[in-house]
Image (cartoon, rainbow over all chains, first blue to last red; front, side, top):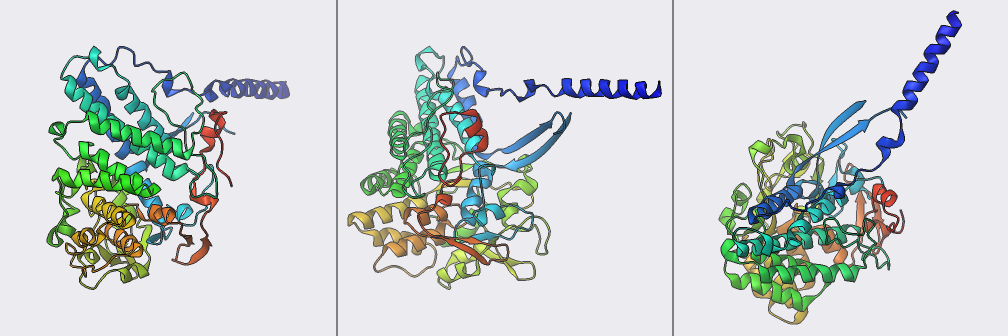
Length: 71
Length: 408
């Protein structure tokens, strides 16, 4: 009975581990999937994008590593 | 889920400038914080991160601007055209930075450059690599178009690209590729604008702590609010105090001092730390605590040096231009000029700004891998596969049309 409990616990852990490590998180999310259609209507909008471009030259980049599951 | 955040100053904020300094005969990495030793010893590989993602993100942004139909917008459309010109200059700068970093022009006979990207969301999500010459021509085309679109009356700040930066960049690219006639005409356009001047000897050192100097054409804006701290360019060049503490990884090779005349004002940007044992850049980007100094990317002095070299190559009067620099630095004036004189003057004037490695490359010189105590690890003869950075592994995995550079 005690052994069965450990087996069930192990099986449940294995299922949880497997389901949390799907390949879904590995699929690339392209920044290019965003659309800019209709978002630029004024010259001021161009200026805002230009400021963002200058920021890329100089910004402090925050890098993020997500470790969804162990190796 | 475990999420780790860490900070890095990429592109012109630190990494591009520092990387090209430690790969040159100006400086090396002492490994104090473990930064830039890989670059100093030419040990990078496809997993060594660099500017690829930053530059293509920049290109994506400016392509939105460039490809917008101005006639559909509200507002001052002439100003809109000016902004599109600014965006084209940034696209040219991005392509040039990619090309000089990842292109095979110094890697032993290869002809591959980098992918030219001119749309934000094009049909082709897997761009192929263009040739070196194709990228160069795209850069020139952007700069010529930009110059024609921009109106200098809209240029009100040096923290944004301005009209004559298009010509300054054109001269820089032309010198890099030895297109001397183009370098002459582009430099003359800047000089004849009358908008800039060489900073005088008295103000040379203090100019590095001052924004918007008369010699500055375009500089990146930083302030105390950015609070860069240890990720600032200045922090990799020196300790905040004299004693060891902080990073200070990028250390100057002692023989660099020998290239200056005794009274040259540029000697004042050098200093010793760590009990007098470590020679460092003290004067350029001087704010070590906050990294709040602006970083000039285009200075008029570089335009003059580009012009002098182009004149020398085309039979013009390089002496007058070289003396514009020497006379404003309390250095010995020139009576004649050789190619070596120009390269040395560039090294003296532009040290710590990331130019020297490209000067070595474009003149076909070898490079030295330097260890953490200033020791020579190896000499890399020209050309060499390591003179072209590897295409990032993430790009290789994501883009089936990408071709890795030789040797990686």
